[in-house]
Length: 443
Image (tube, rainbow, N blue to C red; front, side):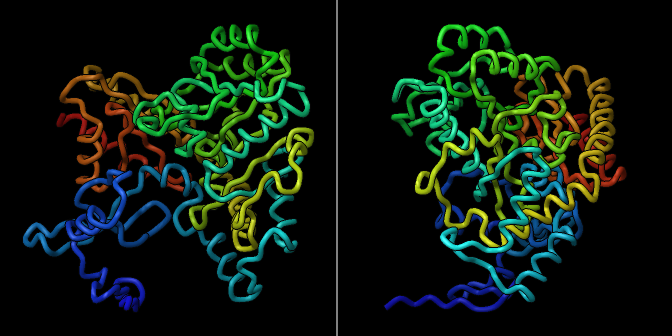
């Protein structure tokens, strides 16, 4: 007979006599190695316990005097859950909306086969903030991209009249759209693709930020291409910012060849880059876009696809669905995540605070020109890249920052991404910068 006993809350949460408040960082790691899939490699010797404020985590680290115990210390969050918490941890406006909804409205979940009143609020808010005609709610960020892919394919067959099963969707090299099978089919990262084939056909890549590459492919195969799917700024690749004229020229080419421009704003949206959505920095409007991460305010997973009427309307009942896409509680969270974005002027804050952070990092680069190759970013989506030398290791920088009370994470070995909450203070920006300088100096 199954014996599984679960009791308590918080540190007192106990599963079969294992009280989580008693576990040391090494014991947490041991359980994860034994019971969990190894598809992530978290920073060593640290376990987040709770939140202190919008940009500060309380983390447990090994007690220097007893490895079986822990000590708690503050950790300034320089990663913001990969831009999922733009509004800051436990944003009061969003939290209050959840509490009110569950205590007073008392409607957590119903299926899409029956309407609920909060869906109307979400659709009005989401179409308003994106300046799009229609929205389809989803859950995870990759789901928004996956649905965008499906819609673009169907539009190609129904509207552009591409011969059946001959459609092509174009992506950019260095892209990251998630880790679903379709997303990794578009990826050129070997680590994302190894032993997951065969892959989804009908995908071709062009070099990111190379307008001639995309022009050449459009001229050769434009009649079969339904969409070009692109991140306006490539986050996972290391915050790769395109030339100012790249996306405007891409938009012109898409119009010329009757090809949809599909933008992935999952990481770059909701104020992160100094505009509500990064494509607005380049004064373009896509035909369809995917949003996620901060769409849920760091409280619930919320994502959606927003697009022009003639694009979204290729779907019909049964062609797409999601059990939890737009359920009542998620709709409320989505509405208030948008409200905070507007009411707290988060895009403007990201622009100002990002300029301060980038200026600080450029000063560090000037001080250590033999170590830091480049500083990149828009708003508070920033990164610094080191030269590819053995002693300039991104993971060592992440660990060094952790030891100084700052959470950041490397990407592609030599690049460290810094993307804090958009509510971060100038003092916290300077603390992150001072910590980076200290760690770089010690390399």
